[in-house]
Length: 390
Image (cartoon, rainbow, N blue to C red; front, side):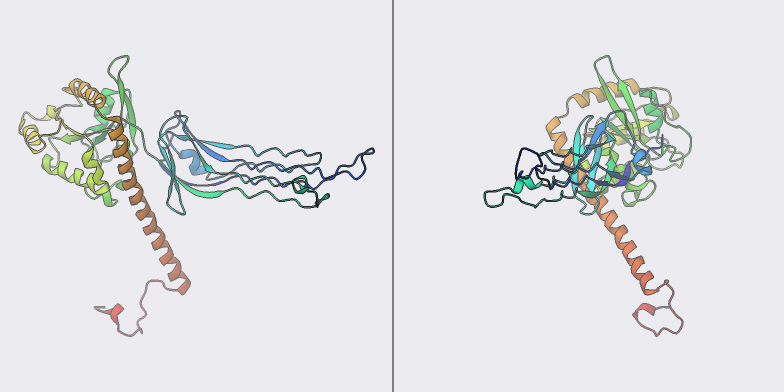
């Protein structure tokens, strides 16, 4: 199944049913009074998180959804049936954003959590509602109100306890394959991982945690380089970041320089990441006998946990996994929730600025097209500020 983590959809709630205009007509009842019933309420559109889903791909092919309208009222004071609620299943970890206002409508952080994204219209009133001592035979009714129509952006952020961070080919996929049953693609070229992979690490029958393998980052990722900011937001919900460091880079680069470059991108994306626990895992220790790199990492980051490993051979991996389980157990849940909210706000602001920039570019192209401007400067145009240096 193709992994899709962001889609735009349009949802429309049902319209309320109109009220009925009716009067009693019975042989034994003279001058029967009004008996028009109310219409039914329009159906809502509700998103429900489902643990069996891990992608938004279904919305890519069907972006428009409409709930059922309320049924009209009828005589004998019969109320019309309400429209059926339209329930859409989404993966847990989905954030819902109003595409027009760029407001976060809500979040679906866990399975079975739900969110009403469009309210159905209220029912119309039948003429019975308008009967009074001064108006015995009202002929007034009201139509049902229209339901809400919204353009939404659904963003999926994978839910994991530990997020793997590092350059392409640092060994993240090899490590997650070593510690879990996940089978990510592993190859000796950059950007082998193009989508996040999740793996469950089981310590014993009662202890386990989830690891997310995020596609490799490169310098400039916070500005869109490489796979850009698309996957950085998947680190939002992780509780510990595990930075996988290649101690023997094939290009001969300095591992410490590589650490700084990647973490600069992380903090450029959200400064709040600096408050999240970042552990270091110098990897590929089987390719070198020089421990100076590990000592240099410990000296540069004395407050961080550093666990040298070889994901390929398994050296040091068991100790790392046990340490991670202990570290996760000691995290303050309330503080983590507050930090996650701050990071999520940074992610939203960045998404807003990116979408606004795209809208500005599109609006500029539309204006140029309306004016017949194709980007070329006529040879006969006079010199001016726009032709300086031509």
